Image (cartoon, rainbow, N blue to C red; front, side):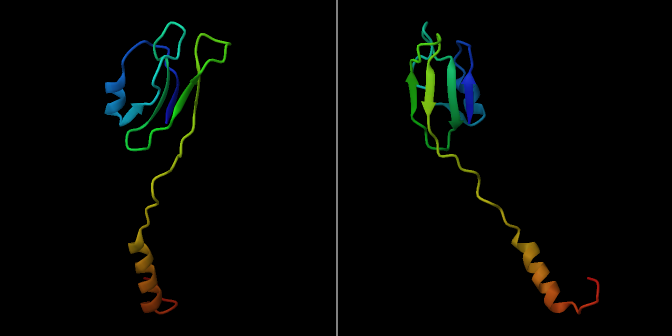
Length: 97
């Protein structure tokens, strides 16, 4: 997840897409218009709902969102576990393998 005040008036969706990211804010986040504040997530994850709120303290809007963050599935190396079991059953104690 990439969030923050980009403070640039550029369309950088192509750049984000090249890194597998999508800009999730849909609307102006600044008094003068434009989306200067961003919430970006991976394109293969569900999109969070982003609320744009006027806090009244700044020329920028407040962004509020919630996301279900999940890590990648763990990777187990079963081969090393199987080899250890085989060694423990077939190598006599006191013998080096």
